[in-house]
Image 1 (cartoon, rainbow over the protein chains, first blue to last red):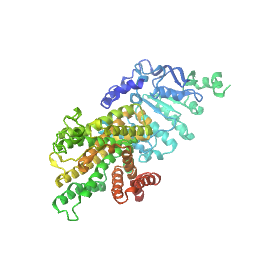
Image 2 (cartoon, each protein chain N blue to C red):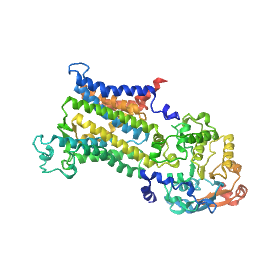
Image 3 (cartoon, one colour):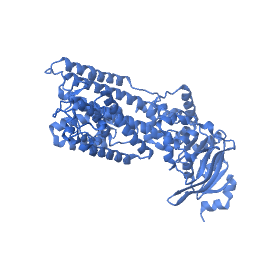
Image 4 (cartoon, rainbow over the protein chains, first blue to last red):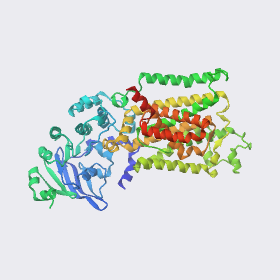
Amino acid sequence: MTSETLGLHGGIESTGISHVVQAEAIDVSHKAILYLEGVTVSFDGFRALNDLSFSIDVGELRCVIGPNGAGKTTMMDVITGKTRPDKGTVFLGQTLDLTQLPEYEIARLGVGRKFQKPSVFENHSVYENLDLAIKAPKGVWDTLFHRRDSAEEDRIDAMLKQINLKNRMRDQAGLLSHGQKQWLEIGMLLIQEPQVLLLDEPAAGMSDEETERTAELFLSLEGKHSLVVVEHDMAFVASLARKVTVLHEGSVLLEGTMDTVQNDERVIEVYLGR
Amino acid sequence: MDSQVAPANSFYSRPAWFGLGIFSAVVLIVIPLLRLLLPAENPLHLSDYYLLMIGKIMCYAIVALAMDLIWGYAGILSLGHGLFFALGGYSMGMYLMREIGAEGQYRSNLPDFMVFLDWKEFPWYWAGSEYFTLALLKILLVPGLLAFVFGWFAFRSRIKGVYFSIITQALTFAFMLLFFRNDTGFGGNNGFTDFKRIMGFSLAHPGTRVTLFAVTGLVLILTLLLCRYIVTSKFGRVLAAIRDAESRTMFSGYNTRDYKLFAWTLSALLCGLAGALYVPQVGIINPSEMSPANSIEIAIWVAVGGRGTLAGAILGAAIVNGAKSYFTVAWPEFWLYFLGALFVVVTVYLPNGVIGLARRGDK
C-alpha cells in the first residue's frame, strides 16, 4: 500500500526536486543517526523481525551478529526500503521516516548498502561503475545531458586509488576477482558519500589479507560515516572490536562489547543450540 | 565492446562516421537523383520494386532501433512493438483517407467503409483528421501516450521479464481484435487503403515516392544518431545498469522506473513514426500489423542482428526482411520455416547476432 502512494511523487518531472531534500536535512541533534523502533516484518506468518528496536549513533561503527534466520538481512531490507515493515518506524536522524520513502530516495539521502553477494555492474568498466555511483544529480534529464567535469574525475581517481583498482579501471567489472568486486562495491558506496553504510557480510570470500585490509578500511571510516556491519565471521568482528548487537529471532538479544557478548550464556546457547 | 570500456564518451569512430556519411549520401542524394534524372530503362535507375523494398526496410530499421533501445540496452523484451508501429500507421492512414476526398468508390466525402456501414457523418474521433499537422501530432502522441500509461502501471507494479513480454503480447492482440471490428471506425479487417494523395501530392507520382523514400532515410539516420547519443550518454549507462543489476542501480540512487518509462515511451514514439512513414509507401494499413506474430518478428530482427548494438539492429532488420522479400516470392511456403530456422541458429550459435560474429572475426 505504501509503495502505491509513493508512486505518485516520483514522476520524471519531479526527480530533480528530491535533491533539495538532501543529506543536509538529516537532523542528528540527538546523536542518533538511525533509529529503529518496534519494527515487525512477517512473511507468510513467519516473523522475520519481531518488535525490533535499536539505534546507531553518528559516526559509530556497529557490528550486528546472529545465527541464520535471526533477521539480519531483513533488517537491512527494511532500512533501505526494499521491504516495508508491518509495524514500526525507521528514522534517519530525527525527522525522516524511511518506511515512507522509495529505495532510490533513501539512497540519495545517504544510506548506502553493500549486498552479501558482491553486486557491481559487471558489463561496465570499473571506472564506469564508480561514475554511475558517484554523488550527483540522478534524474533522467540529469544523466541524459551529463558531462563529466574534472572535479568528478578527481574524485573517481582518488577512489580508484583508495580501493586499489587504479590499474584495472578500464577492465570490465565482471573480470575482477571476488575480493576486488567486494572492494569495488565498497568504493561505489563511499563515492555516494553516504551518512550510513550498511555492509552485509563484507568479508565473505576474502583472503585473510584482504579481510585484514577491509577491517582497517572500516576503522578508518569510523567517525566520518556511521557503519553497520553484519557478519558471520567472529574473527572479523573481533578485529573491529566495537559495540556488538546480537539478533535472535527478529529482535535484539543483547548489546555490548565483544567480550560480554562472547561470554553471555544466552548468546552461547543461541549459537550452539540447546 | 570498446564503447563500454573506455571512460571517454566516444560517439562514433572515424570509420563509422565515414560509413554513415556514405549511407546518407546514397539514400538522400544518389538514389533520388538517379530515379528522377535517368529514364526507367537505365540500370542505375532503381526500380519501383526495389525503391519500395528499401523504403520498407528503412521503416523496419527504425523499429529495430527502437526495439534495441528497450530490449538490448534496458533489458525489457517487448512483444507488442508492432502495436505502436500500427498506431502510427493508422494515425497517418486516417489523414490519407481524408486526402482521398470524394474520389472514393461511392463519391462521398466519407471514406468508403463508412458509406458501406451506412454512417452519415464522421465519428467524433475523426475530427481534425484532415489536417496534416494534427496527423503528425497524433503519430507521436497516440503511441507515446499509450506506451506512457501502460509503462506507468507496468513499471510501477514492477512487472518484469517474461511477464512483461506476455502482457505486451496480450496488449497488441487486444488492439488487433478491437481494430478488426467494423464498429471501431477504422475500416475493420480491410483497414485503410486506396490512398490518393499526401499533402496534395499524388502518391503515384515518382517525385512523391522518391521524397517519401528520402524522408524515411533521413528519419532513420536521425533516429540512429539519437539512439547513439542516448546509449553513449550517462543515461545509456544507467539503462544498461538497470538491465544488469536493477537493485544495485536503485540503491545507487536512481529511480529506475523513470528511466525505464522514458526509454519505453521514446521507443514507442519511434515505432509510431516508422509506421507513419511505412503506410503512404506501402499504400495499406490493416489490423494484421497488430498481430502477435508481427511483434515477435521485430524481436527476431534485433536478435539476428545483435542486440545491444545499434548497427546490429539495423543489419538484422535488413537481413531478415531482405530474405523475406526473396523467399515470399521464390518459395512462399518455406518462409516461416526459414524464419524459425534462422531464429534457432542465431539463438544457439550466435548469441550476439551477426554483429557479434563480425566482431569475433576482427580478433
